Image (cartoon, rainbow, N blue to C red):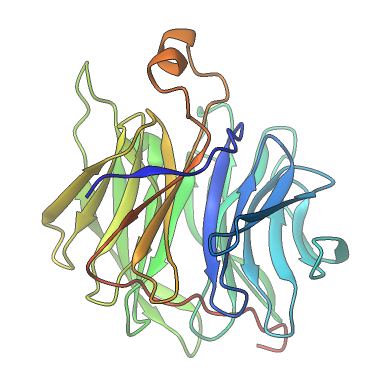
Length: 293
């Protein structure tokens, strides 16, 4: 299976692809380009919704529209991507911190993590937002990434990209509590390969798929943490994966081109674009954010 260009958008920092079964559309963000994109593979329709600031992640809302993580905090957006209401401030120093990767949990809460942009202090966190407010679930991070859930919702996966690690937690969908943190995967960088786990998704067999930033590929891990598949992507910096299409058997992959060297972009001219490839095992549907939870 080979990934090919699905949408030659060449985003600065493409991220957070998510499939809407309702609209049969793939949504994704360009963080540096301050945009939320909607792409319908069936018709080729592509719309970019301009955002007021950097948007790191989002989830679909139960009543339509989105919940999103910006530099300033967690917001509700309407169906056209316009901000409606701020739910919570980013409690970190917004000069060096913004929300990054995130996903809605099985009960309708929003889990979103931050990035410590200087990559120096380990000041980033993974947070949970629900009607009780914003609560940290994990800290001491450099770049919170890779949030995904097992099919039964009782295992939470989460990566810290610059440390080459993916963690696994016991998760209680009834309370939103994460416990029993254990190491799921640790990658070992080499001089020629600094591929590290970025955004992720889980398939119906419970396998964890992660894009390797600066690794030019996507990996698939079994629930026991063993590597069972590896798939090249025509970009040095894939950023996140999502399952989509009518049966969710298309793997979409976002990528980055911002601040990449000229020789790399000459080798991978479609960096920043959206890629896709067929897969045999479908992915899980996205949960929807419920402000009442």
